[in-house]
Amino acid sequence: DTAVSQTPKYLVTQMGNDKSIKCEQNLGHDTMYWYKQDSKKFLKIMFSYNNKELIINETVPNRFSPKSPDKAHLNLHINSLELGDSAVYFCASSQTASGRINEQFFGPGTRLTVL
Amino acid sequence: AQTVTQSQPEMSVQEAETVTLSCTYDTSESNYYLFWYKQPPSRQMILVIRQEAYKQQNATENRFSVNFQKAAKSFSLKISDSQLGDTAMYFCAFFRGGGADGLTFGKGTHLIIQP
Image (cartoon, rainbow over all chains, first blue to last red):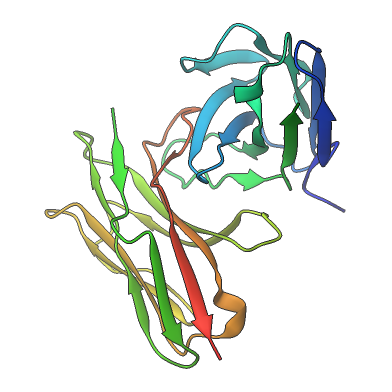
């Protein structure tokens, strides 16, 4: 009964390849996020999707594209992988509502290594 | 834009001692939420404690409590009776609230509990 799941947990690939990371949440939340944690452990928001609409798109290269087939899924596609894309990518979800703490629940992370 | 600063990259204490992790933030918002997340070596992000800015009372969760000073924009985490399992990275996070904003994280404090 995992709340937020990601696949794969580890991904090793060559520079220039295209890869995807999948995320699914079974919490009934309406907003999902992708975060990147770099080698210094710094976490930064990449994207969020609310009701299938992109809400935030920070200064992320357009090689990264989130795809949400439905409210429970937010996949991350990365084209032409570069060495600097090596990081841990976390998916998270929350229920947006004014007047309430919108706690974000995190997936286990995907460690991406680009060789 | 919000910023979150954690000035202690690493701390080490003996088991059963009390330890305080510091966090300051900068924002022009009047209402927001603050969180402490724990990331053990398993890399799972675990919510430790949360605080609404409009509440003056400091949040507590068992051995974890915060000292929230809104005017000073300070949000420190106190861990009482520290245990070996508390060894982890601790991240302070800011959330503007209301919409689908992502969390703004500090750079983290690596807390080591010595036996």
